[in-house]
Image (cartoon, rainbow, N blue to C red; front, side, top):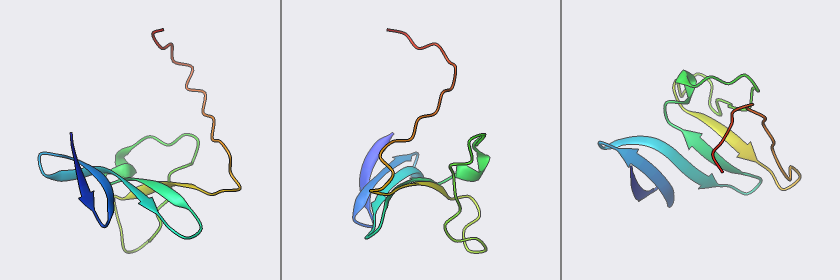
Length: 79
């Protein structure tokens, strides 16, 4: 992946296609997944910020009042 600055924020691309982006707004910051509708989302944390306008883009929003998000994937990780 290649890191680029798009829309004034980091965006990670592969073969010229946007994969993941970061964004900061007045009331929240977000991680954008440009093909996010293809991701499994059993915890329902991915949202479509502009239904009817964007088809694939999904994001996870973080607000100051939300200190952490913990998701237990039950996957063993190497130490």
